[in-house]
Length: 616
Image (cartoon, rainbow, N blue to C red; front, top):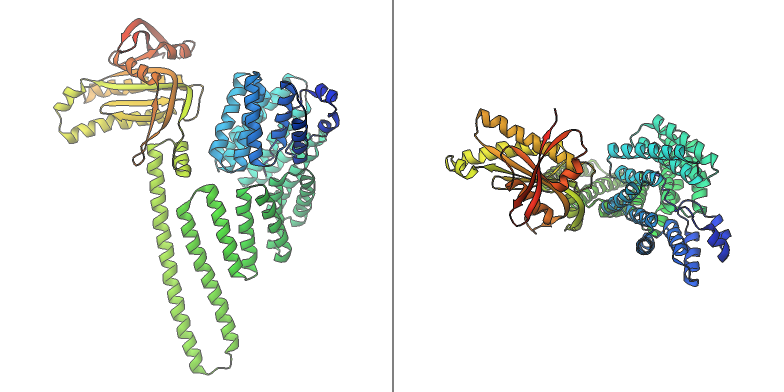
């Protein structure tokens, strides 16, 4: 179970002393605390504070609130006020809390989008501790999405940053708790990967810091997570003791998400011991809290737990109803409509089969003394029923495989057309919101004399030639983490720095450009007598999806137009870059540059241009 530490550190204690609320803030814990949030809302409504104190109060409300809609409301208020007063740290806090709210709503794409905004602010302002904190949040999202590699990477980055922050300044309570949280969550990630011994090592490290700072809530998370490991290892008594201790502390702090997880685990322990009546109230309690606070993932897990319990008790009707509820909530998170139909179909078949077996058993008990003729008829009916069930099962399995194969095929095609994150947004919402990017590098290529060359070839040979080059271009840009935008005739366009911002997009795109030129030059000597021009420009763009039937991911803006002019104003087998790209790369020792001067570019006037080469 991930520990979510995102509480804003108090900065205006003296101001609170003056207005008489010192005791309120002395007892604030560094996690969500609904009582604190409710008290602060009253304070905010009944008093007229200056901007500095308002920022502190609104930030603490957002950090302590447990209702996701309320978190969004107060976080947006925090960002608006922080922008008015140029309080950059509170802008960071606002985006962090918005990310938390969407993560709790299971909207992982929007959560990640806001976490990256917070990370960019922290990096631009050299906020080392805050960089560590938000990387924990990013790692949590990757963990939930099942991306273990990125989750572990961001947790380790966070631990490294937080340790360096502690070394570079006097150790603070806040930074110690942050570091402990990163260690705890990395342990949880190893737990998810079934690396239980590695998980216990990180849980042990985090517990030392929680105890050293006397931080009760962190200890509760640690106890709960160690309890989960004990349960996996079959140490049920130790697991139950740990989990109950953790829940006791979490209930007093009104931290309900982990409570749901731990209640599930206790229920599992009793299910494994065949004590289903003891397991039942734990599962129901989990659903109650999850519904109250809109935790869809936990509602889904709770219904699955109830379905399992009632199946063990042979109450197949209730088991089926709860299983259907589990599927509905699960797919509201995962957006898998086809899988829902298959799951319902298979679940219905299983219930019918088990109910039939139960009815048959009862019927056999009633007819023990009936004559042989009746027994033969019963056996014939049973055989007919079994054959029907077999045929239906075979049909369901076959249909399920066909639907799943078609779904995988459509997903693969969609992700070939659109970036992965954009494709997921389109599947989930049915549309894609256009996004602005401050710094993106755009590349255009064009073959010299291709029109004349194409006249000498048959249509088949022409397509084969284009495919030969563009397939290699695709490999090159994928190698350098770039995004293909489109091809128009013999022109090829790609970009770096989207759909996620990156620092090294300019160097990546120039390396790709030089590799493309080398590839074309090599094959011009061998077979196809073609030359190429390549142009690169860097700047702001808007990216989005156009079309309602045939989707296409595209980018717009003056940056794109200038990149096209760099290509048309370049020279054969050369990479021509704009001054904006040059300014990002001029200190990079991997490249050499040739200033071409201010050259007339169609529609743009005179523009400074540079040829770039890679130093050997």
